[in-house]
Length: 194
Image (cartoon, rainbow, N blue to C red; front, top):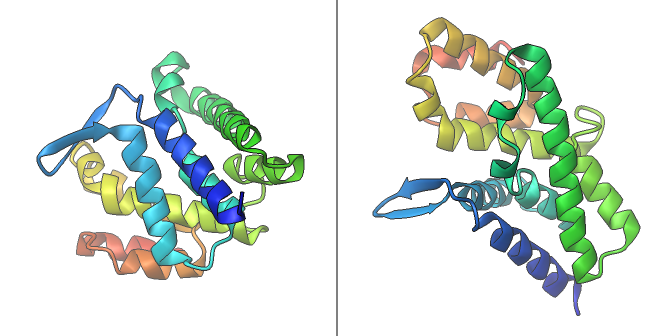
C-alpha cells in the first residue's frame, strides 16, 4: 500500500468513527454528525492554511477530537480545574483512539507516537506542526463555531475569549484569522496578540 493510500485509509477510519456521533448539526438542508463535520472542517482549513502539511499532521488534525461525544464536559466538575482535567483526559483518549486506527492500518510506533504527541499538543509554540494544529483549531472555531458561541456571551466576554484564542496562535494564524468575517469590534483582540 502506498503512503497516500495508507493516509486515505486512516482518514476514512477516523471519519467512520466520527460518523457515529449522535449529535447532529444542520448543514444546509441536511443534518450531519457533529464530530464528522468537525474533522472534515479541520482538514479543509489545514489544506487552505498549510497545504504543504505532512501526512502525520494531516492525521492529527483530522482526529484531534475523534469521538468527542464519548467524553462529555458535563462528566467533570465545574470550574477551571474540572475543565483542565477534562481537556487532558480527552486529549489522551483522542490520541489513543487515533493510534489504534493507525495501528490497524499498519503505521509504525514512531509515527503513532508523533501523532499522539501532536493531538495532546505537547509542544505548542516549540513544534511547528503542533502550532499549526493549534492554529487550525482556532481558525475552525472562529470560522464555523464562533457565531452560535457568541450569542451566549457579553461583548466583554467575547473580546477576552478572542484575545485568549489569538494568543495561542502563531503570527501566520492571526493573519489568517484577520481575514475571517468576524465582528469589527473583535479585530483589536486579535491584533493585540501580535
